[in-house]
Image 1: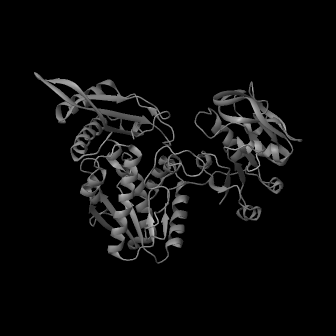
Image 2: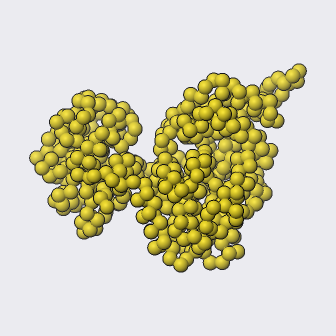
Image 3: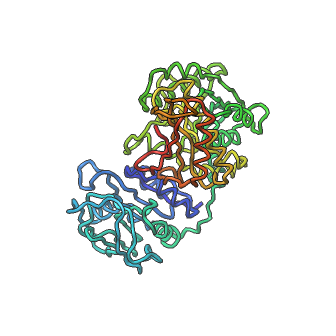
Length: 511
């Protein structure tokens, strides 16, 4: 199987680069920059990509690379820090830029370069750098520049070495996918025959090899990610898998029963299913807590406690299975990225848990890739395309303290919103949509009486990878109908707001 290796130098887009390679139907794996030359030779990649990173190449503790990698004859593309590293290692000069570049920038490229074939001579790319290549190494030709960056791209085609200062992998680089396609297909000579079914087959093989005769316990929430992870594990190890569904009292309306119908004893999957009613203990733990991160950590910790208790009831369990996906990993700040918000399924096991290892079969995938994997596994479309739901549930869709009363309010409002979106036929056009309960009360009038009740916030976004998202422009008549129904049908609500903020600067969830 042809593959491309992405060598990670600490950039937050490392898996996004791999994902873009997979979009070209070529398998990609991310490995640390410390990966040995012998191992690279053994893997025999068709191409290598150096990621960006937060450090300066001339710093004493910065990640470096052996010159030997440039003698393998394997095409290499350096991105951002990766481009500077190529220049620095091969005798060029990297320095602090007189003017840093951040955000969308126009770059002029040489369209005679194979890397920029069919790209406009002036194209918009995403820049994010303080250092820059001041002088290209001997044998390299400068193929791109901006007003303040003299070497925005360079290459040495005879050695199959290419470098760009910008990030072609992000959506803000308008023709970035053309550039990556040119590198992967034309320069590396890949045929582009890999498909998601290859990922599913390999994942099943890897799970079987790892688990052996052991037992696994899956944290099943009923959401897309955990459901796909559960079915993948079921295909691999069958009844060696026990799925524990924790009904923490923070689910959407009727969702507990729906999950049991699909995965329970009368469902279609070969696995053991346990439903735990734990809502009282979650409500008790969350009483008086208002800070979002604290709520997330409490919910995550209580999940672990429940799993541990269930594991002890069924006997020795070797592995804990979680539906972690790549945006969860990035937002939780693992590696070099900053913490945006903690995900309870990210970051490893607490010391007191008896499981010997976590299995996260979807950890390197983005949401749309998870859906593709779900379809390959034969999961019904209505499950694969159901709305994403965070592990902490409605606990992070309720601003401030979580109470059973507030949960019922947001459940009813959310059900109305989802019903009307479905009735309008726009559900599949949206990446995610939901209702949340603000902590704001305001004066209203119902009939001849004054009210002082809560405001519901509606949220709907368009997104492909959940790393970025744009506010969805839902038709006004749909919003108006939803608003009227919520105010009339949900006790305790007298006002409905629509959140029109994109990500960034906001996150998709409110907390």
